[in-house]
Image (cartoon, rainbow, N blue to C red; front, side):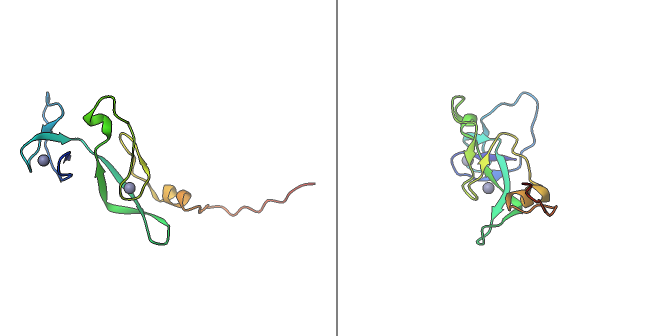
Length: 110
Ligand SMILES: [Zn+2]
Ligand SMILES: [Zn+2]
């Protein structure tokens, strides 16, 4: 999958050896397409995190400019997106929502 930096559109692309960025955009024809990161996090109106099926695609600034930032806040959910952004599993979602699997019954000694 590639994303056009100009239009933000994503399209599928079969990579071949020796290709380098920027790739040619299938949509506008410009050499302005980069490998995007995917954010699968979604924040609902109730403030709870969830996994979404269709990710938000973003091009990290350093793809465009080697001196650019290597992380970016997701325009959709606000989480920080890093290179090779990991897809969350349910445990990650629970942790983000402050849900713990085990009940804590601590007694303070004194
Ligand atoms: Zn384009
Ligand atoms: Zn996001």
